[in-house]
Image 1 (cartoon, helix red, strand yellow):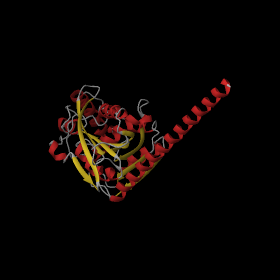
Image 2 (image 1 turned 180 degrees about the vertical axis):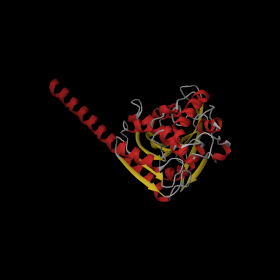
Image 3 (image 1 turned 135 degrees about the vertical axis):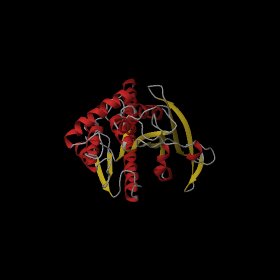
Image 4 (image 1 turned 120 degrees about the horizontal axis):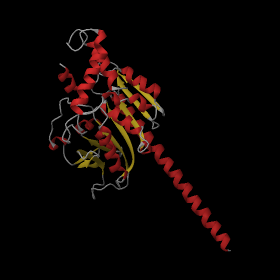
Length: 322
């Protein structure tokens, strides 16, 4: 029984698909020509991570005319980069690029295990490293769902990357893996041999922790998202389905309360895997557009200050020469 639950934690069903299922590499969205550039990145553990970069381009040159904002989509524990289909069309239509990946151990990427954010950080970091030097990228935001949302928070709290992330949409995030397992274990008291009595819940979770550590080499108690949230500063929109029975909505409410930066929250109808309401999807897009606009305005102010300083220095030099 322990082996079964351990597998569900670190080796859930792997999404199987072919590259052809990603659709055509060139396509039109509301008269906007777009391309999908598939690529392979290498994370710090030397695993090959499959990704797709969706970009709005000029119809004649098939190139990006000027750098555009980009949203990195981060899927859940049994998902893949195909899940980004939920947002790709609407974001490209307003000139926002989307970058989606298969986390290590998911989809077509290398790797044997899922670690619920712990090692997935490496995958997101290699994407951010790539985009930071990509000529077509103006600025970056994150859109994560469940494990992807947890991964986003872990990286956004990192001193090396927080300044790169201009906004985040976090859907059905959890505060910690232990808390999720404790809540699930209570539901199965008396129904499975692992938790015959309520008093055995904590011991059962400890057993799972040890089993996951032995099988996948990571400590689930290391995945503390609530602690990371306290050290984040990027603007964030939290979302959660009110009838989510896998990750309770209380997780997002607690994250919202502790989050260190500008924040908003939307608890909507649905469950963990249900299609998100149109209202939330539109809210998420508008939120990220606002984040990108504010970033653009800040850059313009910085540029004006630099020009003014240069002009002042030039005038001072001319006065000194006279």
